[in-house]
Image 1 (cartoon, rainbow, N blue to C red):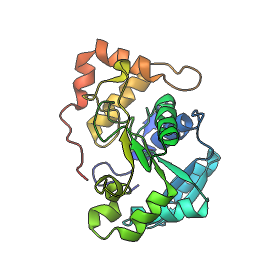
Image 2: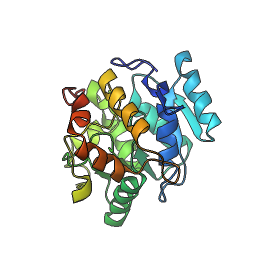
Image 3: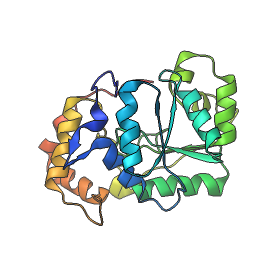
Length: 233
């Protein structure tokens, strides 16, 4: 709830539901995940986040606001996870099929860390990271720098000599790295809100392929947030 650039963004409305609600409903459509956990902070401002998670029937773990690495590690330890899939709460068009593909690549290759973000080929907002508990534990034990503590996987992908790391590239129909489908700033929200207004749900969620077709066919709409700079890690 205390996002620096767009406070309260995860509760902004998208076709009658909060941004976080949309993220959760899409993650629930995956086939490879066994459990969904919201890893939020102990701040009272995030009580509403825990309440929304409970309303949707997903688990909640609460920890440090600033030491996000520790929060993830303790959450994974609490729920006895062997592998963790990290999806951020500001991606209301996250694609279940893409999540499953990254998970499958990770497991079949026996990687420590697999993502589709090391080389940007997917639209921003379809970001998926998968890592083993052992890799997370090692990062938690070794991390000392502020970026390593604030950003969960920073230590892992900046110390590739210690981990087996791989990237998943987007298929041609999703290869649109120029598109921003996350909610970081007001113009991001305006674009996503427009998408939710224009495209009706299919099987409960908006199909990402229809989103890409819509943006390809409406370049002025697609450029609504093109000027937004991604916050650096």
